[in-house]
Length: 420
Image (tube, rainbow, N blue to C red; front, side, top):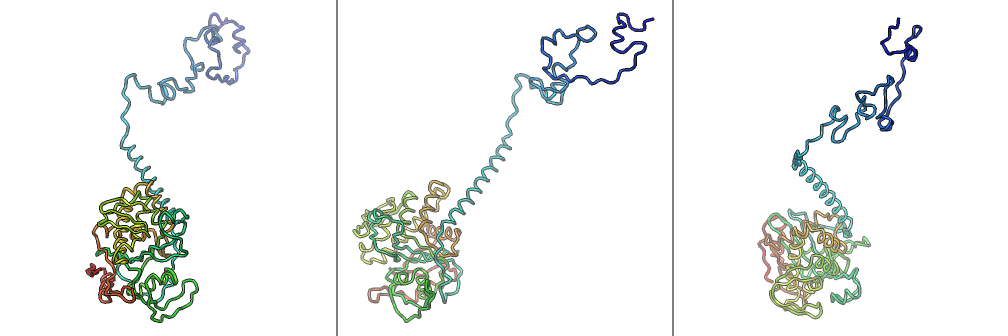
């Protein structure tokens, strides 16, 4: 008797190992069918081993058993783990502005920090720290204010023949002090004190900046600018400290070219000139009133002396006014926050600015902001008090100088005045 369902032949049984003597088949490895491995035309007429067309799709032909993503769905289609497709017409979720603003703020802060640090090291590398104040001997005691000796020299370093002619500087070799002033940065108020180059001073005992040799003081009296000409910045500082009793904390010097280039990099400096004047030697030709001076005009303005009755004292007043106005404009947000002004201005100034070895960029910044404070009314500007003259040199008023120095040392509001 045939126990197999009707329609199944012995051959079929034999083929499947179902005969009387048949043994159970071992497990067979099913051939891996990859999606797309069976051509569509074969799949359409494909029949199972029983001669019937499959009534369902096992998934091998479409690859769904492997979780192949379907169009519009996530992993495994609707039956997989991915999210179902969004229905047509569903609005997109609103952007997370809080997250975007947070990321943008972090990015901007990072860029600002990197830029600031980079600018600091770039500028710090350009500073010319060439003056060694440790060579200055017998120094006065330190005071409560920070004091700067600011010097404008007639150095023509880096200037072409055309520059010298345009700026009316002449072609003298070496360099001399064209202007000198003490800036005291104090919490009680900033004070700018001009030191006339014709001031009558005594050259004290000093140590040569190059030779290291000690030169004994002999009571020799000279014009103040002769100290610089004799042994440079170190002797100038020593002479100022000896004749005033005020300790100088920092030294800063700039030449003709650097001064003019800074003004041009700023786009000019606005000045209110009270009375017009002319001077052939400096090239000055100004009318009264508000005007913007370029580098060439600014240099002529601060160098003019022969157009005034009290040549040296009148010139120092003009120098104070201009430097304060220059600092006021250089320290504005329009310059500091504008890289197209900041970098050219820094580059123009630092290329020719010579300072002491302990001067940091922070000290330089304090100096400029103190000068700005003088211009804005937070302090005062004055000439060193003068009592008379000796052999054409201006003699300082000793009593007033001592009072002035004491007020600066103790960080007191300066009440001393100058009659000239």
